Length: 224
Image (spheres, rainbow, N blue to C red):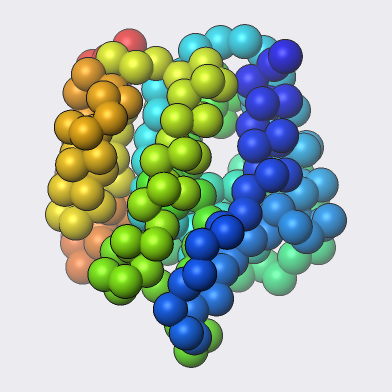
């Protein structure tokens, strides 16, 4: 079975079975035929092999990126203009996707990048509250309910062909602390390297985009 086949089987079965606090909705694009079809095109294009890859983990999908395309940190604009996968989703750009695809381009392009790295998130499904994005850790009650799901989904993805020596975490604050705590308990990886979160960079540090881009490239290239 190829890397892409494992990913698609995983996505097809994704479901949160535990009860979440009132008002919190789950973003699950993999139950949508259009989004899942785009995932099939994307993963068969870039992951139809048995190569080992390094894991890069974000927080959880948002409404305008992975939450609509099903492909982490790839909005409908980048999916078509950079990855060459035509789609009829609303062409709204997403900030985190903007930065990640700058990294991908600077690394040498999508073919080279995706042959070395696999991106997902600590929670591969996203959340909204009152129509706004919600992080998995924003509600202590929700996080407690999600912990078995998070552990199970990380464990499953490790079977795809993921390198266990080093992983990367998008976010140097709460996401990194939580992932490191889980790693201490379950020994997913030998080492986790934190990177500044793309949304933080694009919202608050735009004047330093080039500096952050260099930091990403240096740390990604150092493990190769």
